[in-house]
Amino acid sequence: YGKSIRERCLALIDIAHPDFREQLLAQAKANQYISQSQPGKSFGSIYPAELECLHTTKNQKQVFVRPIKVVDEDILRSFFHKLSDHSVYLRYFRKLKSMPQRILQTTADVDYSSDMAILALSPPDAFQHEMVGIAQWV
Image (cartoon, rainbow, N blue to C red; front, side, top):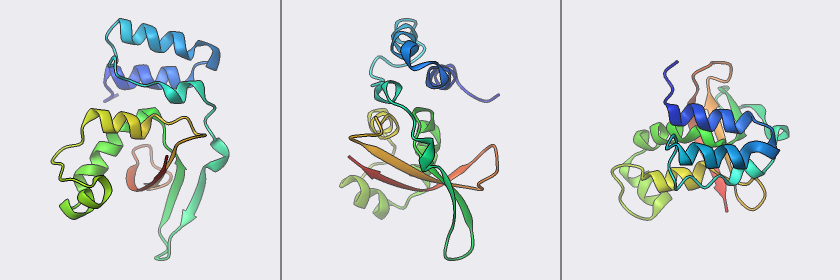
């Protein structure tokens, strides 16, 4: 409910057996369900579920911390639109009025070994999370 065909394809590829992900990604691109520029790096990697945890902040707010997934592009876009102009400039070293799809894809599609991003989501037990923080290293 409420998800685009692109989001559904990426989610299904994400949960498929690793042996079939590359083929499914190619078929989704061929059928134009997802962009030809979708990198697909995360589909060749194992999601590090051991990094998922609940964390309590200094002001006693609980957040769910986990590695980013390729299906997180939309919550990443929503997070971007909540940032101040100054925060956007400090993160991307330029002024941006909207988040380019290319940046969303490279941020959300990581291989979990040479690049990684960790999200903080709130509330921790809700189906619809709001992203409240991100840490990324490349």
